[in-house]
Length: 270
Image (cartoon, rainbow, N blue to C red; front, side):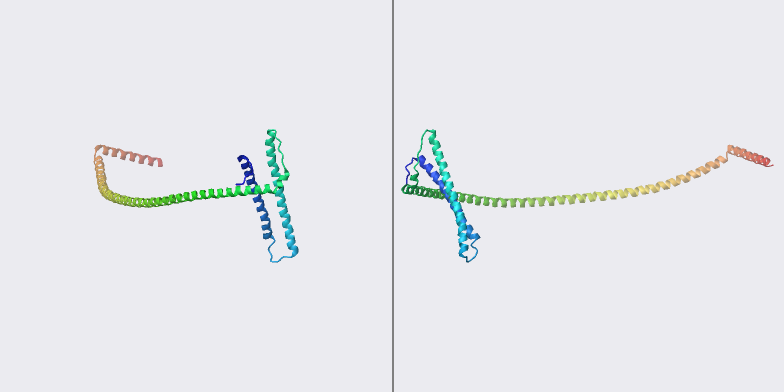
């Protein structure tokens, strides 16, 4: 494995920075690829183009790509300055003065060494990542099989429960039907008994009514007889009274009084 001559801690810091730089580089390359794709989608819609049209399209693409690359290079330079700032700030806390050799940044041998380190590290990391993902994939497959078995078992259990529920509902339905039949029979018997009692009561009422009507007729007849007997008795009583001395004397007095009144009227008329 390629080494840069750092201790483990510093080497991990370099790896973290390389990982950051690789992600930024990949993102910027995607941006440049999209510039070309946009040109294809927006301008390459005809089968033939003139030299001037092709030149115009390439000039426009050059401007866009130049801007993207320039932006990335500036951002990379600024990022490196921020990284140096962190290192210098830490060194100054311990009263250290760090020095840099800019010429070493173009040392082909060192650059190739860094490239080999990056390739070895990230290839190894990729292999480790692939192995890790494969292991995780195997675990997920095993978990999926377990879940599928549990799901199958749950479905079987659900089917059993549904069947048991249907059987129970059928039994309950039969019981309810039998109960309803019994209730209907009881109601029919109750209605029949009520009809019988009502008919008996009606018959008794009819008989009572007839008896009362007969009694009423008899009573009316008795009343007429009593009234007739009373009239006869009153006549006999009047006849007997007329035959008494008091009645005769009273009648004589009334006759005399009438005669006197007639005499007085005659005198008054004269």
